[in-house]
Amino acid sequence: MGLSEERIRAVHVGVAPVVNGRVVLVDYDPEWPALYEREAERVRGALGAGVVGLAHVGSTSVPGLAAKPVVDVVLEVADSADEASYVPALEAVGYVLRIREPEWLQHRMFKGPDVNVNLHVFTAGEPEVGRMVAFRDRLRASVADRVLYERTKRELAARDWVYVQQYADAKAGVVADILGRA
Image 1 (spheres, rainbow, N blue to C red):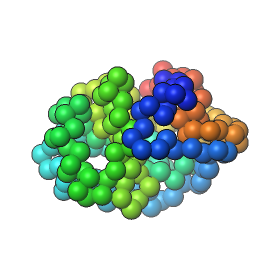
Image 2: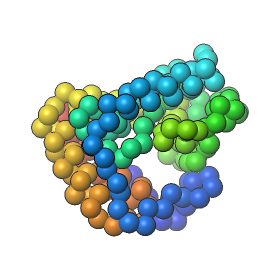
Image 3: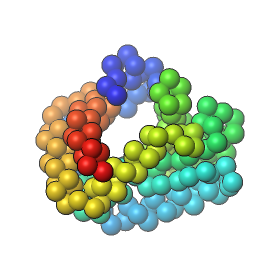
């Protein structure tokens, strides 16, 4: 989705996350699934029936894969544009809205209160959620694709970046390639 610096700053609520250097990858931590479960309980407790879907995605959801130590969670709600229906409840349990992208699938992203988590919010049925889950599942199932993805991530992490989003955008080609096999 390649965002310009202007666009990166525009979608952030507060300050855009600046890396000013290299992205740090760490070896897989077997605690990541437990951290996801803890956050899933927090989200379900805050939103109750407002949770249409919830999943652990991203590299921390793939056993054996090196990752930035950030647990990615995808949340489906009835309408992610209807912030009044979920933002206050998430803020009440410590989440902070950091990204608002109404022009890109009505995506919202929150940071967690005490775990380094990115909580991505989409409207239920949004195909991007299925893409995220399919990518996770492909990496879990294919050693070759997991090795390819980790090698790419390590090569990119060795470069200097201003914004984390630039690192993410640089992985788009290999992600598309792997998704083509999912």
